[in-house]
Figure 1: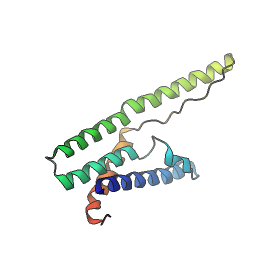
Figure 2: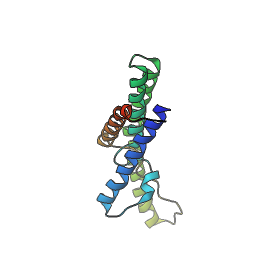
Figure 3: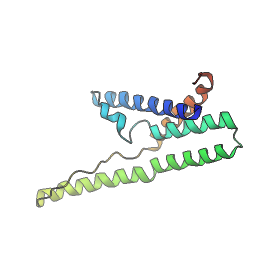
Length: 143
């Protein structure tokens, strides 16, 4: 239960930071940011890092569970900066093409969501949030 609660806490912290970061950048509070993927910081990175750190503290870094957690965390963070980020960039290009085509012919299509992945910096900040949350969780009494 400690691992789950620690991961959830890191996710919530990252999502709250994302909410206020959006407000600072755009001038208004958009609660929908709490349910979207992408953006600053990476809540995915925060969640998997916090879980991995908590497993390391509970089971040790030589346990099979830590190995699985670490590999899973690396895959999630790689995916966020690699595949999902690339898909977001492709969506921007496709939306631009779609807008240009709408000027020429009648198209009844919706725009594609563009912010899907993360930059390396966004993942790094998420990683640091998860690391701090995981470490601090050993001093917080959990049910």
